[in-house]
Amino acid sequence: MRIFTAGISTESNTFAPWPTGQRGFDEGGYWRGTASLSGQCEQNLVARLFRRMANEGGHVLVEGLFAVAQPSGPTIQSVYEGMRNEILTDLREKGPFDVVLLYLHGAMVATGYDDCEADLAAHIRAIVGPQAAIGVELDPHCHLSQVLLDVSDIVILQKEYPHVDFEARASELFRLCVRKAAGEIVPVSCLFDCRMIGFYPTTDEPMSGFLRRLRRAEQQPRVLSLSFAHGFPWGDTFDTGSKMLAITDGDAMLASDMAETLGRDIYALRNEMVPRYPGIEEALDLAQGSPGRVVMADTADNAGGGAPSDNVTLLAAMLRRGVKNAALASIWDPISVSTCREAGVGTKLGLRLGGKCGLASGNPIDVEVVVRSIKDGHDQAALGDSRVSLGASVWLEIGGVDVVVTSIRDQTFAPDALTGLGIDLSEKRLIAVKSSYHFRQHFSAIADRIIQVATPGAIHMNFADIRYKKIRSQNYFPRVADPLGLDSAHS
Ligand SMILES: [Zn+2]
Image: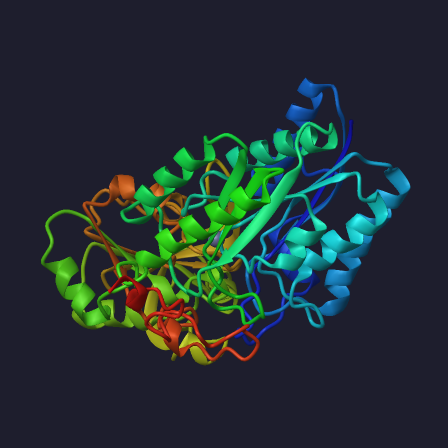
């Protein structure tokens, strides 16, 4: 078979004050037909996997554009259309194709396009025709739309949060799409709207148990794939929200039953899953009263959800308390990085740190810092076996806290974001990271206790208070206690 693959990935925080432009994709990763050749980003690993599977199956794989940008505001229209049209041109010029595999994020908004994934897939369908199999892999933090399901054949979401299973899901997508193109299966999709906005880490109960049920249900005859779309709360679109997707082999009734049954299972857990995190002062009390090493997460200033990652409210509170043997990563402040590189290692200087991007950044702090190390091309381990760049970065000593400041904006995934600059974590009692949950994959091993903190910032978890204008309906949990009206039916 002839197989084409491409991908455009970003998660648009429609409340963020700055847009995603070409520089955002250049910085995140941009490969024109070369994603499988080198690199350790998710896109490289997935493209390499597709190439290996194509070779093993005796298929021809053609790689198109793969691009990824750190979440920010909506993508500039011409930038999105340029990337889309590049993919479409490749399909026209290098086709025909039996299978198209798209590695997307699933919450990409561009000026004029609230559902970029459906727009891209619809344009692809118009070129490849009704017989070709179009498969899409998405991050669970997507706005899963009926339009996307209508124009593609198989949509598979990562099940885990942290999303360590992106390659496992890509492998399923490849196999199912080849079977569809061979006429061995007839995928039928059904979507159930859970009418919820929420946050669903899968390493703990109740979501870990739910995933076990999902995997068991996937073993049933005629069930091809089951996915739970967590939704991306900080993107205001018609399709924002949590949904259950079932895909069966030619059985629409079974798909509908599975989506609704599993969707209601999640719905029944909704009150249990509301994030209840301590505020900063309470969290610091808990940390200082805990034996061993505490890893504390600044959940609301997570670049991975489109936050600026330069809010220093938590750092200011740590400094006020005079905490010792502490570290914090990573503040995005290219101006401070540039100043410290100029000053050089060992220099002591006054610095205005953080608080630069907008209201969600909060106020900066004016501090005396010592530049302990400087590294160009700093990076860190990320999801699965992937790695991501942090750009030119510095280690600053501020009171009793070793602070990492970067020039590329990303959440803190792994300890090497700190140790890579020379910070010794062995004696640290408190490590603060900017991340909502992905940090757990690599930090759990070195934490005696993890505390997620309700910090101020762009992606706070008061889901009832997010000012949606485009969402299908304001009748969603937690704004409404029982939007599906199922509680009274039970009592
Ligand atoms: Zn995600």
